[in-house]
Length: 162
Image (cartoon, rainbow, N blue to C red; front, top):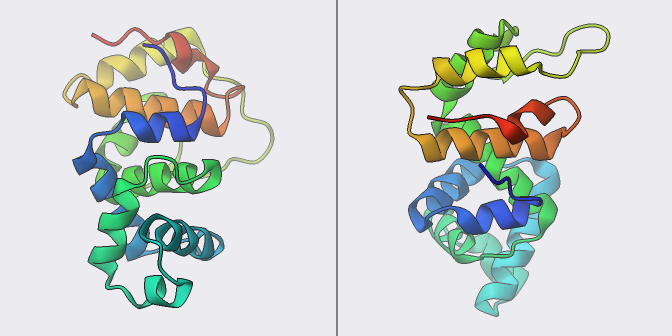
């Protein structure tokens, strides 16, 4: 599995349907710090005023955002997280369960102290636990984790998915 080295590159790899799902999840509970960037990207893509972009219905904003292939690195990263936290929580939960990491419905609960990087053995066990999920979804999730913290999730770079 060749990992995308930026969130924007990974975003471009997603199907239109996946980008639409991610954008819909994003607008369902948008991170406050990203709303302005998202509205700015929509306004630029549709050549409209920011006020007009803000007035669009949530579904319309999601549709436009899904069509933007280069939303900027921070917005792309936020959209990827929204995809996983919105519609792929069972995948997240299965992965974290396989690693024995505490989580709340797929959201990692940070532990006190430093968490060691993922080992090759733990990675192999986690990959096996995700066999029931579509391979491209697992690859996208692993890539998203790796982009967030390459040191901690570095073993995912060479994970052998079957």
